[in-house]
Amino acid sequence: MMSKLTIDILPSSKSDISIFLIAMCVSGLFIYLFSLAVYMILLLSLIIHELGHYFANKIYGKNISEVHFSIYKPSYVSSIGKRNEIESMLISIAGPIFGILTILLIPFLYGTFNVSEDTFFTARIIIFVQLFNLIPVNNYDGAYVYSSILNRNKSKLQSAVKFILVYSIVIAYSLVLYVLLHFI
Image 1: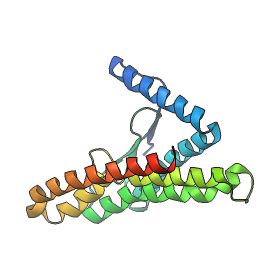
Image 2: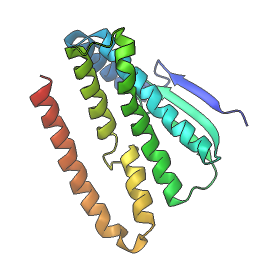
Image 3: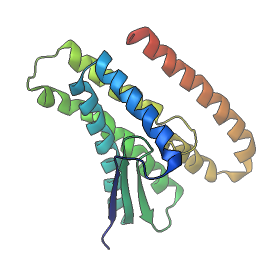
């Protein structure tokens, strides 16, 4: 079965326009403050992240219905068929693992094996983004990982949801504080 590949570069509806404008402003600010090379490597890590989900689905024999990339909305890989909790968890974790492995490409992308300040900076941003994606909040990989774990024990789901919400807020604020202290 042939899977559908979609790439959103421009907004397709009125509701997408404000999200697109905010994303473009943040992207422009990022490029201005850091560099275009760091920004492009970060985008590459996000593509590799989605390829991680794609390959994990293929390993488990799932048919891919759509691979969607966007610069202003969440990207995703949709598969057809039921998955058990372990498969779902491993497919969800595959994206961040592949994204973090992008760090191994950075020396090649900068054209040297010399470790520079840009190399460390880009690696830290990639790690931050991939770990941020593991926060158990709706539409992030972390939500799918934790729901896979909780589905194995559905009787504890209600109390676990409250724990996850508190955990998510603590992790999110910790990551923001980390960025403020280390990058700015």
